[in-house]
Image 1 (cartoon, rainbow, N blue to C red):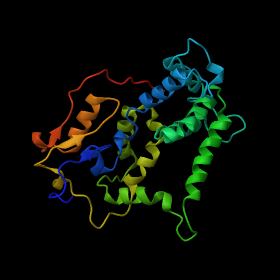
Image 2 (image 1 turned 30 degrees about the vertical axis):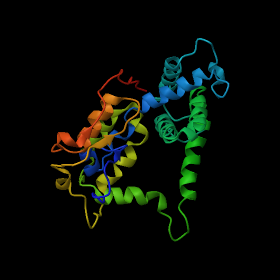
Image 3 (image 1 turned 90 degrees about the horizontal axis):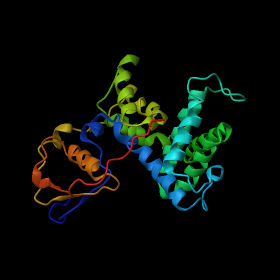
Image 4 (image 1 turned 120 degrees about the vertical axis):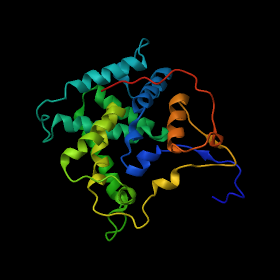
Amino acid sequence: MFPDSVRHFVLEGVMHVNDYFTRTWIGSTRDSETALLNLFNERVEARFKLCFLTDYESKSTTEDGLMSALVNCRGVLIGKPLLDDHNVSRDYVVSKLKQVLLENLHFPRKFPTATKIADSDLKCDWATVLRFAEGSTTALAAQSGAAWNTAVDTAVPGISCGDSSFRVDYPDDLCTIYRAHLAQSSMAGGLVDSRLVCARCKFSAMEQFDINKFQKINMTSPALLKWSLRPCHAFELLVGSLGPGAGGDALCGMPCQGPGGRQIHF
């Protein structure tokens, strides 16, 4: 880090140190419902002029109303038989819907696509939802490069898994991590299956991450902790990411203020 040249630095999007070490990525979907609510709020503020949610255009429409409609429409799928005209279970459709929504909520430039997906959901147009999911898979395959290098899309998970300390020998051992993911967000069902892969990884990195090096951190200059929507939550998360031995002089944060985020399960 060139300590003689760097006076201050920013920690942004930092994982909890234990989550980083185990590579379970438990916090990866936290506040995803809040992000979706914010997307709906932006569309309501625009009065649907730039929005695809035409079937729900109304002066009395709110972001909470759109979220409730989304939950109610999706509820007709849970635990039901195979979807008509598709050889997949309805639970599979719900999982794929959450997956593609999460993928398109990460960047503002993808918000229009996220809105189209939400619109298909509100219309119970599951065929379109599945096409979005298939399109996502096809896009990943297209990024795989030459025929001799077909695993570009799995390179980061591969490195991640090799650095992970979490391994299991029996399927029942995965229950705790699965429940931990679902406790973070109702959207976790769209990504948790990919997080379980590392638990069965047969390889380890040559220079595996050493958690002991993240203990008793001392700094001569403060670190700026950067967050956005939820100051209190972000402050707690970033403090935890520095490890239990982090000294008070390492932190320079704003007071916790403002309301907490809302948790909507669907």
